[in-house]
Every structure is written in structure tokens, then in C-alpha cells.
Image 1 (tube, rainbow, N blue to C red):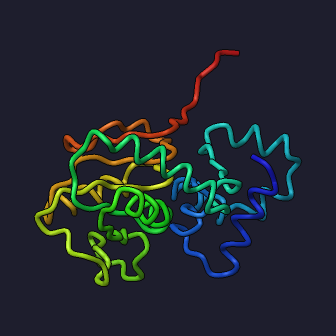
Image 2 (cartoon, rainbow, N blue to C red; image 1 turned 90 degrees about the vertical axis):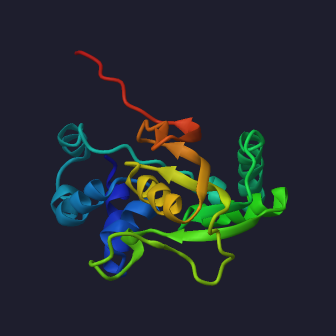
Image 3 (cartoon, rainbow, N blue to C red; image 1 turned 180 degrees about the horizontal axis):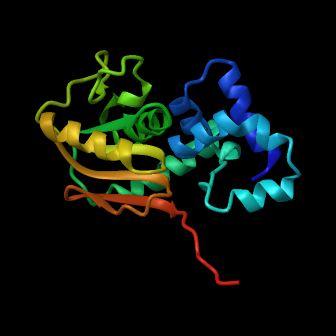
Length: 205
């Protein structure tokens, strides 16, 4: 694990990001974000080689800033996702906050569909929430066929939560993400398609 990555996590913590927000910003699991927040200062005092050896079982992070900082590049990604949705009949697109929102916006424009935003429970301040909700200022998806869009699927927990919620109010047909780190290809019968799947390969020494 590189020290500059640890520093990023600590800087986000110091400006008030929650562990869940740090995980989303760095595209890592919440467990990894918590590990970095709690152990970052101690890890920075060690030589980088020691950090890498100690962190062999730590999550893989995905950095795709060079794409998401450019609306033109992001639109090209959205066009690929539109192509992946051509085999589905649907009425609206649901973008998972926060990473799925710009993608859902671009896809809805290209495919001329309404879009809504799902705010997952990890972004809510109250710990009493068992689930998130659809943004109140967006079109209702009640009883409608919908597709779900997100940028990076890390553990798959947020996607599972979103699908469960949407099944209670509408009819989710498919989910599309840019990068999948979980290896999950379907949730409760809903297929999940990824542009890229990231995994690890165990090699014997």
C-alpha cells in the first residue's frame, strides 16, 4: 500500500468525511477505510516495504480520477453503459448516490428516460435507518421498470440494499456498474453487468 494513498484517507478524515464517505471517495471497502483511519499515522512511520508486506490481505483500491474529472470522458463511459442497456425495456434510471448520479444523468439524456437518485443508508446521518430512500425531488418510480447505475461496486452491500428497496416500490430489471470488485453477477434475480471486473489471483511462492 502506497503512503500517498494512506495520506489521502487521513486528509479526508481530517476534513470531516465519515468512514463510509472515505470508502466511497477512494473506492475501497468500509472495512479498509476504517483500518486506514484508525492505523494511518502508525503505518506512515513504517518503511513502505513493511506496509506492503503487512497489507497483503487489504482491499484493492481503484483510482479512475482521470475519467471522472472530465465530463467528455465520463460521457463516453455512459455511452458504453447505454449500449449495455439496449436489451432491457425500462421506464427510468436510478443512480446510486454519489458516484452513480452523473452517470444516470448522462444515460437518461442519451436514452430519453427519467432518472431518480437512490441515497443509501451509509450516507444518512442517523444510525437508525435500516435502508436508504429515493430522492424526494425526483420523479416517482412506483410501479415502473427501472435500471440501476453506479460507478464502483466494492462489497456489493449497497447494490443489494438498493435492489431490495426498489423491489418494494418498482420493478428493477438490471444494474450496470463501471467497475465491480465484488464478483457478484446477480442479486435476487437481477443481473449486474460491469464494464470491468477486478479480482485477485492467489499465487504460491
